[in-house]
Length: 170
Image (cartoon, rainbow, N blue to C red; front, side):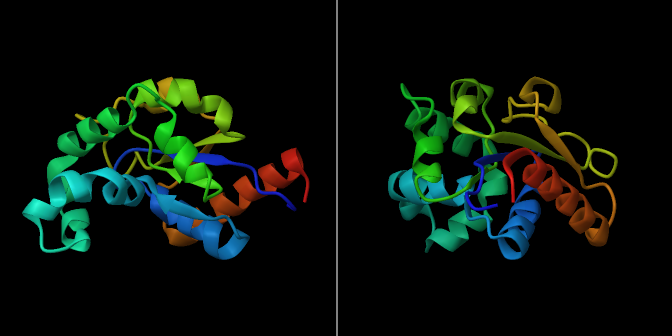
């Protein structure tokens, strides 16, 4: 593909979104920054983390223990413009990885060529709590199955890229 389509990679925590993005980056030339890293650097570190952690990496590694706080701070950053984070990421990258709010998905959907769901629900349960996007309400254009091993995931990502090449040209 000469021009990469813009992708939104969704899925529950620990279901393989960043792994899929990493495969798309290393094997197919897509560029991304995790939304958690992006918003962590933009809002969480300077407004909260710097007073609590020795460095950004320590804060980032501890994010699983503060999902609700991260969710609320991202929501505040995206108020009133629900597309703020999306536009910031897409200005630098082909992919937004890890959106968690349906209130941000709906006004941002038109900014993406493909909305992709990474599914691992056979292996891990769906996330509960701070994420308001589900596979059903995300209405993804494509679902990548991540219920097998890493080799299966690579094959499933390759199928997705074939779908993109068919849809958008090589």
